[in-house]
Length: 242
Image (cartoon, rainbow, N blue to C red; front, side, top):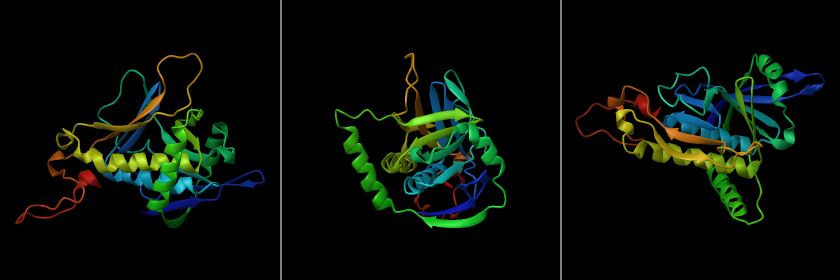
């Protein structure tokens, strides 16, 4: 996949950071913080580009990936008990040492970015995701995906293989979400989720993020990605699939 990004080089004291953002916003994708249930709701374009962004993050150990999601179209469903406020998303390798408390300062310095185009390697991502799944099946596996919510931003801290696995989860959601029952009428469909989030003390309902597909209106124009219109009909891009 080819990703078009903005690249920034903000400094804090003697340190220079590399931060990238999607050049074009994920307009019809939103994320709510897990309290204890989070919900990522996206159309085909948003879920597909999230797959690419997680794949890029997997192999960019020294880069912070910032995905603004608060400024898009507000979701018309999914607000309720246990679902937190809308948040942006930040991906960083745990070895980078990014502290959520430092993020607002960095975010204010994301000015005058330069254009960057990168390509992701889906075959390599799939191989590393498979290696991660094999590791997770081991009885001695105790891994939990570190996360935090601060300054209306949800942070995920991982490594190459876990980000690759999440990339594959989003690719699966982008591919199979449009095929779920009821989506052509505007209903959302739960496709998969992030079930390895680190859990807080005290028990209670486990923290999780549900990954859901939902086309955006007008739903009468929705069609499956790659679907060709019937002979004699006018062909035009579908706004529901990006």
